[in-house]
Amino acid sequence: MSAADVAVVVAAAVGALGAIACLAAACVLVLQVRRLERGIEALRHEALPLVEQARAAAGHAATEIARVDAVLADTEAVTAAVDQAAQLARRAFANPVVKVLAWRAGVLGGLRRLGGTEGVRPTRAVPGRHRHRSGSEVRGPAGRRTLAAPRR
Image 1 (cartoon, rainbow, N blue to C red):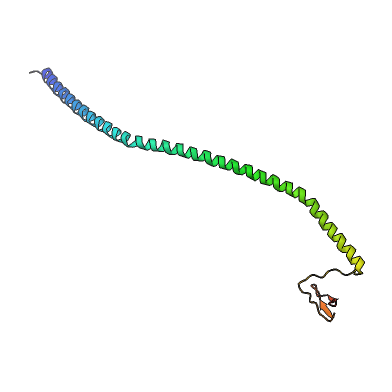
Image 2 (image 1 turned 45 degrees about the horizontal axis):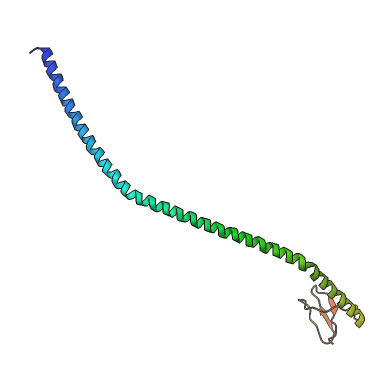
């Protein structure tokens, strides 16, 4: 055998070993692809019901949001109606109430003039002022001396 024959035999042996290694790698890859397909199928069987549940939940949520939106719109309409009614009531009753209070003040002033008690105002309870039966001096809120009106 010559050196060329040895080189051909060695190259053939290396080529055969390479082919065997490629076949082994191809078999391993085929096994891994089949295992991956089984995993994908298992995932699909688990994920499909979850996706269907998510779709149902999203549909239910959309229905509830529509109901809440309708309730909110109704509430806004009621609030607007109440606001309008309050403004109408305020406009309707403000002027007559002011007129009644002015009429009352005028009547009380006229009664005071008729009764001769023009300078006397009705007394109110003021903190720091005490009324005495005898009409003696008392201290007002600012510490000033005043005469207490005798009780009638």
